[in-house]
Image (cartoon, one colour):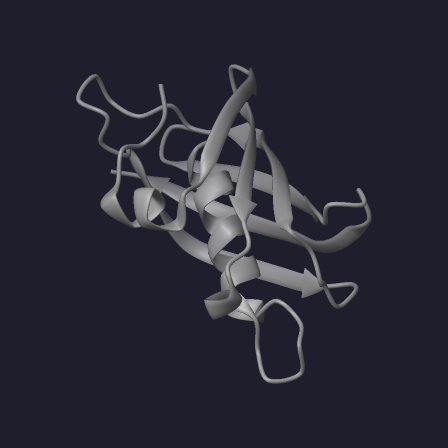
Length: 123
C-alpha cells in the first residue's frame, strides 16, 4: 500500500514496492515541469524525492501517511531532459520517531541526475 494523495494523482505518479522499506516511484514529465533553460525544474525533482522518501514508511490502514519530512537535502548532479524520472528510495534506519532515508533519481536513460536524503518524523 502507498500513501493516497490527490497531489500524487495530479502528477500521475506510479509506485512499486521493492521491499518492505524500499520503493520505486516514476514521474512522467509534462511540459509544465520544464524550466526556461529547458531542463526539468529542481522543484519537481525535489518533490519526486520527497514523495519517494515518505513512501519508504508504509501508510496506515486508511492510506494516510505516518511520517512527515523534517529535513530534506537534494543534490543535483546533472541537468535532466527526460520523458520520465524514476526515484528509488529506501529507509536506512527506522527509529521510534525518526526514520533516515536515502533516494537516487534517474532519467529515462538510467543516468543519475540527483540524490536526496531525508529525516522523517513519525506522527
